[in-house]
Figure 1 (cartoon, rainbow, N blue to C red):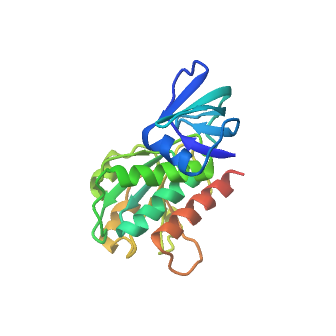
Figure 2: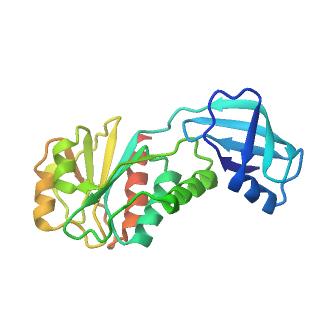
Length: 227
């Protein structure tokens, strides 16, 4: 079934898709009677059937609306790598069901995140691809030091350096995964991170990973711990 993103609220029986979304559906030759899954990004999925198709709009007839609950509460804090890698991270974060994304500036971070239409399209595409009912919130980029001072949740630091003193098998309900840039965190930054309370160091016995791979493997590791 084809899926689209549309931030609907309080549906009255029909959803009207216009402008670029309508043009896209027309390009893929959508037809009256076809089923379309509409995701609003806030936990709701609407099962619809295509009704009237006009030049600039498409009518979707709503047959059922489902409200989903989050499967987990994992947040992501990541020192921003190069632009291409950061875009891959955004896709992975959506596909893994991350609740929020906090871009960070560190000594070895390589890119400054500025909100824009391109990033919105990347998030929407990943949401549609994964049929995820929830769009993650992306916060403005901040310095690592500021984030560490302000963070109030349990922090799971995926570290390339094993640290037996900060390991824990326990997982809190609300978790923040902390990932470094392509070059990792500096020794000074790692020391700052590990000096904070409620920080757990997790070391995976793998070769060096790219930041997007580290995001996927770390979140997968924590999800496995919850099983």
